[in-house]
Length: 100
Image: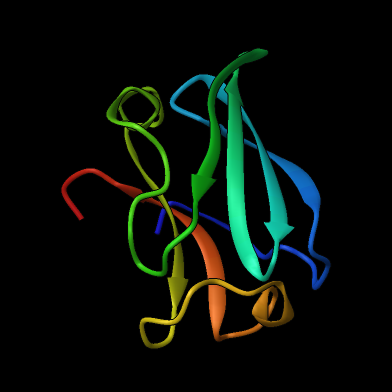
């Protein structure tokens, strides 16, 4: 993975990743046990309430092209990402570059 961010064990949080010359503000929100993500690229909200699924791209192709890769939660097994597992080996937020 090119970038890795270990979210804290809280249900709602924001963090910034700079990739491919762009700034990505990522907001993780938990509702009824399911994690959802919003992303702003260079200050412009581009995706909202994207449901987070383990080992699956979160955002649209447009966002992925701007990052030159795919944002996802890499989790052991196929469980949905849960904030209780954030910042553990069970669940990491990553940007996987195209071609890897």
